[in-house]
Image (cartoon, rainbow over the protein chains, first blue to last red):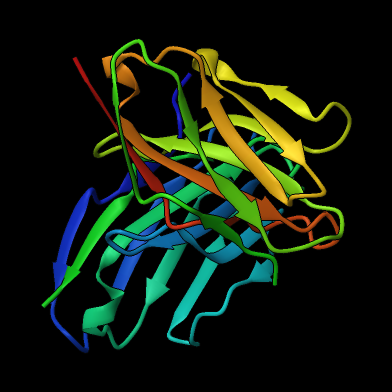
Length: 114
Length: 114
């Protein structure tokens, strides 16, 4: 079975631009979460979506937004990019929105903002 | 918000030696606790989790962790490490009441040498 897939693998953007990152969950999984991992730090929670509804949001500015589609795939959008947005963006999927269900992480999208 | 502190940023160890990676959490109320491993250029993989019940939790790849409520600790141990255990290890905590987000520590880099 395919794991969580993310695209693109790497991305280079300029300050002020906008970016869209994509995530396809494991088949049958209805929950998708997004995390930001800055170099040398642990991942930080950005969003969780379950059944196409936002269930939780971390401490990130409104420049960050996301959505989940009927096929449970998800997009993360970041507007007005800052240098500090450079990070590895991880997507995780699980069967349910509850944390007691194992979250499976994708390999991530490496975003570099210049 | 609940948080975890990983007390060692780097742990060098020789192959076949035992290892302990330390993690302390902030809350004295109910928590869920997790250990994840991240190999270079990959996403995170769940090693083990504590939700309730037995305080000694066994995970994959020969790892185990002990939940100690009085010391608010959840240290990860392995009796004999292999070169292939070289990776970044993250401790994470979640609030059972919110139930959807993981709060990660900054990580411990385990370097196993011959």
